[in-house]
Image 1 (cartoon, protein in one colour):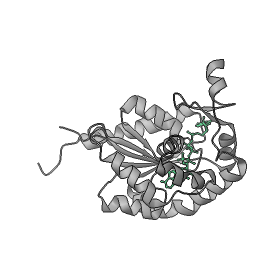
Image 2 (cartoon, helix red, strand yellow; image 1 turned 90 degrees about the vertical axis):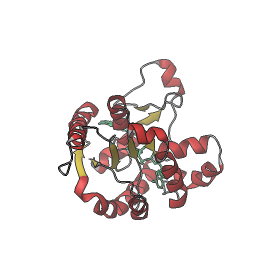
Image 3 (cartoon, rainbow, N blue to C red; image 1 turned 135 degrees about the horizontal axis):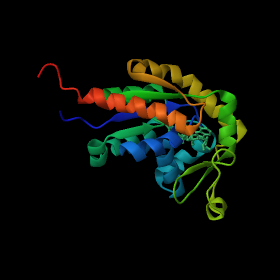
Image 4 (cartoon, rainbow, N blue to C red; image 1 turned 90 degrees about the horizontal axis):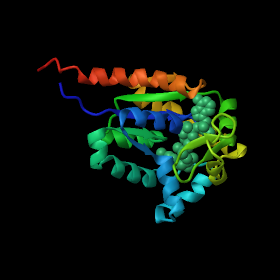
Length: 222
Ligand code: AP5
């Protein structure tokens, strides 16, 4: 049986560990990682028109307007690599409108993973988070300190990672979460993200290999 590549969505509150788990998923499954946050941050740092528009919303911890993000995501999804290797969509959809657009375009994931982490933990994770601008790797001052002094010296903090902005991002997430879930309730899998990253990945890994196996089953109607 020939199997279609995996199509995965990962969701969860700010700092629930989406980016961290995506690094591990990509290593094992070779999916094309499409993170709207990363794509937007790249636009901001290269000073493009999209970046200039998105910047004020992102720095305030608010959502960037749907039309900007949607155009970015659909054009990335339509590229050959995403079709051949499968995709891992991280940070989109983030509103009911965004979920509806994907439905209209018949872009349907095989599985919708939600990382559950309590609010107190999320704030601590954001405040300690640091990014390596060269490799894109995600660190945490306490949980995942950088490997070398050289990396440590170049780490950066995200402008939206202050306690106040994290709270506002969290509020926006909670306001939208329910409505998005209604679109994906049949394929939703909740994962307890408040455990070590390897334990969380183990669960995601077994979940994804099951989804992959199910896709390989020959069609009954053949
Ligand atoms: P985005 O970049 O998507 O931000 P987010 O959803 O708030 O998620 P984060 O990147 O903060 O966290 P994460 O879940 O990836 O956690 P991470 O792995 O880094 O979006 C940023 C902004 O862009 C938005 O606010 C909005 O303005 C805009 N935007 C993006 N998409 C949009 C859309 N669709 N529509 C409109 N606007 C959009 O982990 C966090 C920290 O915790 C790290 O330090 C990590 O090392 C640590 N950590 C991770 N896992 C563990 C663990 N198991 N144990 C202990 N520590 C851990």
